[in-house]
Length: 246
Image 1: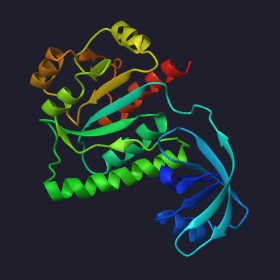
Image 2 (image 1 turned 60 degrees about the vertical axis):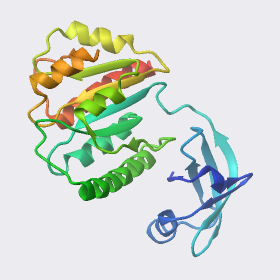
Image 3 (image 1 turned 90 degrees about the vertical axis):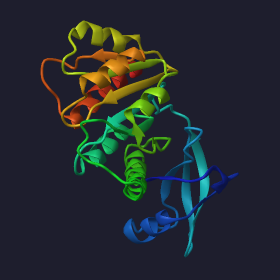
């Protein structure tokens, strides 16, 4: 079943109105008809509004609410992925898969070893594109909320942003002791905010790790193999998802 996001104001009693780009998608791409059922979420209350199409208008789709599902599909904790900016289109893959796995928020991060440098104009256009990818992934994976892709932060600002989060970790290739990693993952509890710091290609510099440790962020190992930047985040989020959903 297809899912779409609307603003809370577009849900009025048993009537739901869909506008924007989804109108063209429903009418001309999916070629849906009156009476067909779709799922709608408002991105806030984590409910799924199951409704049937009443009318296909030129600039909106009118739907009738049939029932509401409250099945708790979101993870019970909020995972904040701080991602060192990678090269080429890797960031798009990272955002897509992080959203599918349950990340609450993605924060692009400028680190010393980042090869890609974005000026203010490019940052704005990239963030817009990345947010669109997050929304598409949220629809595909039947999320109840659309994870936010934040404005790019410096490594220093990212550490400050995470300072009040409950659990913070930074995978590092020189970290040792898988037992420490397991203990950190197993310590995670529902309702917590979890910060995961992932470096760009080439990883973090020693000075960045030192600054993170000084701020209380825990260096962990992801195993004996060196993972690519686009794999490391998926690994940590997957472990957290397993811990939180069991």
